[in-house]
Length: 286
Image (tube, rainbow, N blue to C red; front, side, top):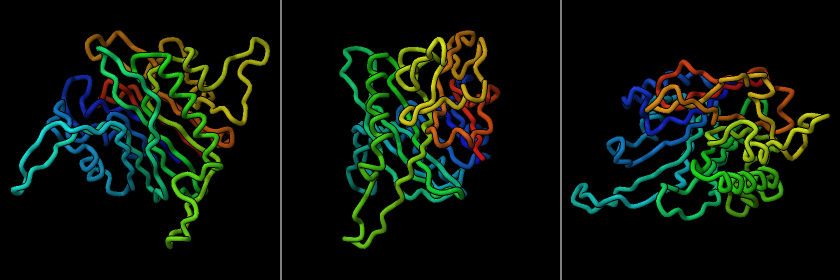
Protein backbone atom coordinates (compact mmCIF):
# COMPACT_ATOMS: atom_id res chain seq x y z
CA UNK A 1 0.00 0.00 0.00
CA UNK A 2 1.59 3.27 -1.16
CA UNK A 3 0.61 6.57 0.44
CA UNK A 4 1.67 10.11 -0.42
CA UNK A 5 1.13 13.49 1.22
CA UNK A 6 1.62 16.74 -0.71
CA UNK A 7 1.05 20.41 0.08
CA UNK A 8 0.30 21.64 -3.45
CA UNK A 9 0.42 25.42 -2.81
CA UNK A 10 -2.71 26.40 -4.76
CA UNK A 11 -1.24 24.53 -7.76
CA UNK A 12 1.90 26.66 -8.17
CA UNK A 13 5.40 25.20 -8.48
CA UNK A 14 8.77 26.63 -7.49
CA UNK A 15 8.95 28.11 -10.98
CA UNK A 16 5.77 30.13 -10.27
CA UNK A 17 3.79 28.20 -12.87
CA UNK A 18 0.30 26.82 -12.17
CA UNK A 19 0.32 23.21 -13.37
CA UNK A 20 -2.05 20.79 -11.67
CA UNK A 21 -1.26 18.03 -14.18
CA UNK A 22 2.39 18.15 -13.12
CA UNK A 23 1.39 17.82 -9.46
CA UNK A 24 -0.96 14.90 -10.01
CA UNK A 25 1.52 13.06 -12.24
CA UNK A 26 4.07 12.99 -9.41
CA UNK A 27 1.70 11.21 -7.00
CA UNK A 28 -0.65 9.29 -9.31
CA UNK A 29 0.88 5.92 -8.38
CA UNK A 30 -0.14 6.29 -4.73
CA UNK A 31 -3.05 4.22 -3.46
CA UNK A 32 -3.97 6.84 -0.85
CA UNK A 33 -3.18 10.55 -1.24
CA UNK A 34 -3.41 13.41 1.25
CA UNK A 35 -3.34 16.93 -0.23
CA UNK A 36 -3.14 20.31 1.47
CA UNK A 37 -3.76 23.87 0.20
CA UNK A 38 -6.52 22.69 -2.10
CA UNK A 39 -8.81 25.59 -3.05
CA UNK A 40 -12.01 26.52 -4.73
CA UNK A 41 -12.64 30.08 -5.84
CA UNK A 42 -9.23 31.50 -4.95
CA UNK A 43 -8.29 34.73 -6.76
CA UNK A 44 -4.69 33.54 -6.50
CA UNK A 45 -5.21 30.81 -9.13
CA UNK A 46 -8.04 32.28 -11.17
CA UNK A 47 -10.92 30.94 -9.05
CA UNK A 48 -10.33 27.40 -10.34
CA UNK A 49 -12.16 24.50 -8.69
CA UNK A 50 -9.09 22.45 -7.78
CA UNK A 51 -11.21 19.68 -6.26
CA UNK A 52 -13.06 18.99 -9.51
CA UNK A 53 -9.85 19.29 -11.52
CA UNK A 54 -7.98 16.80 -9.31
CA UNK A 55 -10.90 14.35 -9.36
CA UNK A 56 -10.90 14.52 -13.18
CA UNK A 57 -7.16 13.80 -13.28
CA UNK A 58 -7.49 10.83 -10.90
CA UNK A 59 -10.64 9.04 -12.12
CA UNK A 60 -9.62 5.76 -10.44
CA UNK A 61 -9.60 7.34 -6.98
CA UNK A 62 -12.46 8.14 -4.61
CA UNK A 63 -12.18 11.53 -2.95
CA UNK A 64 -13.14 13.56 0.11
CA UNK A 65 -12.60 17.31 0.46
CA UNK A 66 -12.73 19.24 3.72
CA UNK A 67 -12.75 23.04 3.33
CA UNK A 68 -11.82 24.27 6.80
CA UNK A 69 -12.05 27.88 5.57
CA UNK A 70 -15.12 28.88 3.54
CA UNK A 71 -15.89 32.58 2.97
CA UNK A 72 -17.84 34.77 0.54
CA UNK A 73 -15.47 36.39 -1.97
CA UNK A 74 -17.79 38.20 -4.36
CA UNK A 75 -21.11 37.91 -6.19
CA UNK A 76 -21.46 36.86 -9.82
CA UNK A 77 -24.48 36.31 -12.05
CA UNK A 78 -24.81 32.79 -13.44
CA UNK A 79 -27.76 31.76 -15.64
CA UNK A 80 -29.63 34.88 -14.56
CA UNK A 81 -29.20 34.15 -10.85
CA UNK A 82 -26.98 35.84 -8.27
CA UNK A 83 -24.40 33.43 -6.92
CA UNK A 84 -22.00 33.84 -4.03
CA UNK A 85 -18.54 33.02 -5.32
CA UNK A 86 -16.76 31.49 -2.36
CA UNK A 87 -13.15 31.03 -1.38
CA UNK A 88 -12.56 27.59 0.09
CA UNK A 89 -9.24 26.39 1.50
CA UNK A 90 -8.75 22.91 2.83
CA UNK A 91 -7.44 19.38 2.62
CA UNK A 92 -8.25 16.44 0.39
CA UNK A 93 -7.99 12.65 0.70
CA UNK A 94 -8.05 10.41 -2.37
CA UNK A 95 -8.14 6.60 -2.33
CA UNK A 96 -8.27 3.70 -4.77
CA UNK A 97 -10.64 2.06 -2.32
CA UNK A 98 -14.03 3.37 -1.15
CA UNK A 99 -14.12 6.10 1.48
CA UNK A 100 -16.73 4.83 3.92
CA UNK A 101 -17.05 7.95 6.09
CA UNK A 102 -15.51 11.41 6.26
CA UNK A 103 -15.45 14.43 8.55
CA UNK A 104 -13.65 17.77 8.69
CA UNK A 105 -12.18 18.34 12.13
CA UNK A 106 -11.74 22.04 12.85
CA UNK A 107 -8.60 22.86 14.82
CA UNK A 108 -8.21 25.54 17.51
CA UNK A 109 -7.16 28.97 16.29
CA UNK A 110 -6.75 32.50 17.61
CA UNK A 111 -7.30 35.83 15.93
CA UNK A 112 -4.23 37.57 14.47
CA UNK A 113 -3.94 41.30 13.86
CA UNK A 114 -1.69 41.30 10.79
CA UNK A 115 -0.46 37.90 9.61
CA UNK A 116 -2.92 35.77 7.66
CA UNK A 117 -4.50 33.12 9.88
CA UNK A 118 -7.18 30.97 8.28
CA UNK A 119 -9.20 28.29 9.99
CA UNK A 120 -7.23 25.05 9.80
CA UNK A 121 -8.56 21.54 9.79
CA UNK A 122 -7.94 17.83 9.36
CA UNK A 123 -9.94 15.89 6.79
CA UNK A 124 -10.74 12.47 8.21
CA UNK A 125 -11.47 9.55 5.89
CA UNK A 126 -12.32 5.98 6.88
CA UNK A 127 -11.07 3.89 3.96
CA UNK A 128 -12.05 0.31 3.08
CA UNK A 129 -8.53 -1.01 2.31
CA UNK A 130 -7.84 -4.64 1.34
CA UNK A 131 -6.45 -5.20 4.86
CA UNK A 132 -9.44 -3.69 6.60
CA UNK A 133 -10.79 -0.27 7.45
CA UNK A 134 -8.20 2.42 8.14
CA UNK A 135 -8.43 6.04 9.27
CA UNK A 136 -6.49 8.56 7.19
CA UNK A 137 -6.18 12.27 8.01
CA UNK A 138 -4.97 15.05 5.71
CA UNK A 139 -3.77 17.86 7.97
CA UNK A 140 -2.49 21.42 7.70
CA UNK A 141 -1.38 23.27 10.85
CA UNK A 142 -0.96 27.00 11.49
CA UNK A 143 2.15 28.50 9.90
CA UNK A 144 2.74 31.44 12.27
CA UNK A 145 2.62 30.41 15.94
CA UNK A 146 4.25 27.41 17.67
CA UNK A 147 1.78 27.85 20.54
CA UNK A 148 -1.15 27.56 18.16
CA UNK A 149 0.37 24.50 16.51
CA UNK A 150 0.77 22.81 19.89
CA UNK A 151 -2.87 23.54 20.74
CA UNK A 152 -3.91 22.11 17.37
CA UNK A 153 -1.78 19.00 17.86
CA UNK A 154 -3.20 18.37 21.33
CA UNK A 155 -6.75 18.77 20.02
CA UNK A 156 -6.03 16.38 17.16
CA UNK A 157 -4.48 13.76 19.44
CA UNK A 158 -7.60 13.87 21.61
CA UNK A 159 -9.72 13.16 18.53
CA UNK A 160 -7.38 10.40 17.32
CA UNK A 161 -7.50 8.59 20.65
CA UNK A 162 -11.23 9.19 21.26
CA UNK A 163 -12.41 8.16 17.80
CA UNK A 164 -13.74 4.73 18.72
CA UNK A 165 -15.40 5.99 21.91
CA UNK A 166 -16.97 9.01 20.16
CA UNK A 167 -18.15 6.98 17.17
CA UNK A 168 -16.69 8.82 14.19
CA UNK A 169 -19.17 10.29 11.72
CA UNK A 170 -22.20 8.19 12.55
CA UNK A 171 -23.53 5.60 14.98
CA UNK A 172 -27.04 4.25 15.39
CA UNK A 173 -27.65 4.52 11.65
CA UNK A 174 -30.08 1.61 11.67
CA UNK A 175 -32.75 4.02 12.90
CA UNK A 176 -32.72 5.78 9.52
CA UNK A 177 -31.83 2.82 7.32
CA UNK A 178 -28.04 3.32 7.27
CA UNK A 179 -25.24 0.95 8.14
CA UNK A 180 -22.77 2.23 10.71
CA UNK A 181 -19.31 2.66 9.18
CA UNK A 182 -16.47 0.75 10.88
CA UNK A 183 -14.53 2.35 13.72
CA UNK A 184 -10.90 1.37 13.07
CA UNK A 185 -8.39 1.92 15.84
CA UNK A 186 -5.38 2.37 13.54
CA UNK A 187 -4.77 5.68 11.80
CA UNK A 188 -2.39 7.63 9.58
CA UNK A 189 -1.94 11.40 9.83
CA UNK A 190 -0.26 13.03 6.83
CA UNK A 191 0.30 16.64 5.98
CA UNK A 192 2.03 19.98 6.40
CA UNK A 193 2.68 20.46 10.11
CA UNK A 194 4.73 23.66 9.71
CA UNK A 195 7.15 22.38 12.34
CA UNK A 196 10.70 21.06 12.26
CA UNK A 197 11.92 17.75 13.72
CA UNK A 198 12.48 17.87 17.50
CA UNK A 199 10.81 21.29 17.79
CA UNK A 200 8.46 21.79 20.77
CA UNK A 201 5.50 21.11 18.48
CA UNK A 202 7.09 17.92 17.16
CA UNK A 203 7.71 16.67 20.70
CA UNK A 204 4.10 17.51 21.60
CA UNK A 205 3.10 15.18 18.79
CA UNK A 206 5.41 12.18 19.26
CA UNK A 207 6.87 12.66 22.73
CA UNK A 208 10.25 13.73 24.08
CA UNK A 209 13.36 11.57 23.82
CA UNK A 210 14.79 10.17 27.03
CA UNK A 211 18.61 10.24 27.33
CA UNK A 212 18.67 6.54 28.24
CA UNK A 213 15.60 4.99 26.54
CA UNK A 214 15.35 7.38 23.56
CA UNK A 215 11.71 7.82 22.45
CA UNK A 216 9.63 4.95 23.80
CA UNK A 217 6.63 3.87 21.66
CA UNK A 218 3.32 4.36 23.46
CA UNK A 219 -0.20 3.30 22.60
CA UNK A 220 -1.67 6.82 22.56
CA UNK A 221 1.17 8.63 20.74
CA UNK A 222 1.74 8.45 16.96
CA UNK A 223 5.12 7.54 15.48
CA UNK A 224 6.96 9.44 12.75
CA UNK A 225 7.28 7.13 9.73
CA UNK A 226 10.22 9.10 8.32
CA UNK A 227 12.06 8.75 11.62
CA UNK A 228 11.34 5.02 11.81
CA UNK A 229 12.62 4.64 8.24
CA UNK A 230 15.86 6.49 9.04
CA UNK A 231 15.15 9.33 6.62
CA UNK A 232 16.41 12.23 8.74
CA UNK A 233 19.93 13.30 7.90
CA UNK A 234 21.65 16.69 8.17
CA UNK A 235 20.20 18.97 5.52
CA UNK A 236 17.04 16.98 4.86
CA UNK A 237 14.05 19.06 3.83
CA UNK A 238 10.48 18.96 2.50
CA UNK A 239 10.02 22.68 1.70
CA UNK A 240 12.00 25.27 -0.25
CA UNK A 241 11.49 29.03 -0.10
CA UNK A 242 10.33 30.06 -3.61
CA UNK A 243 12.22 33.34 -3.21
CA UNK A 244 15.45 31.76 -1.99
CA UNK A 245 15.97 28.13 -2.93
CA UNK A 246 18.83 27.80 -0.46
CA UNK A 247 16.41 28.33 2.42
CA UNK A 248 15.05 24.87 3.19
CA UNK A 249 13.11 23.31 6.05
CA UNK A 250 11.51 19.98 6.87
CA UNK A 251 7.80 20.63 7.52
CA UNK A 252 5.85 17.64 6.16
CA UNK A 253 5.23 14.29 7.85
CA UNK A 254 3.45 10.94 7.90
CA UNK A 255 2.57 9.80 11.43
CA UNK A 256 1.19 6.34 12.12
CA UNK A 257 -0.53 4.68 15.06
CA UNK A 258 1.37 2.08 17.07
CA UNK A 259 -0.58 -0.77 15.46
CA UNK A 260 0.83 0.08 12.03
CA UNK A 261 4.51 0.31 12.92
CA UNK A 262 5.19 -3.34 12.11
CA UNK A 263 3.69 -2.83 8.64
CA UNK A 264 5.95 0.09 7.70
CA UNK A 265 8.22 -0.75 4.76
CA UNK A 266 9.62 2.64 3.71
CA UNK A 267 9.19 6.40 4.02
CA UNK A 268 10.95 9.21 2.19
CA UNK A 269 10.58 12.69 0.66
CA UNK A 270 10.58 13.04 -3.14
CA UNK A 271 12.72 16.14 -3.59
CA UNK A 272 12.66 15.72 -7.37
CA UNK A 273 9.02 16.81 -7.62
CA UNK A 274 8.58 20.32 -9.04
CA UNK A 275 4.90 21.05 -8.61
CA UNK A 276 4.96 23.04 -5.35
CA UNK A 277 7.22 24.72 -2.81
CA UNK A 278 6.69 21.57 -0.72
CA UNK A 279 7.69 18.05 -1.74
CA UNK A 280 5.64 14.84 -1.50
CA UNK A 281 6.19 12.58 1.49
CA UNK A 282 5.83 8.91 0.56
CA UNK A 283 5.20 5.93 2.79
CA UNK A 284 4.67 2.25 2.06
CA UNK A 285 2.86 -0.26 4.27
CA UNK A 286 2.57 -3.98 3.64
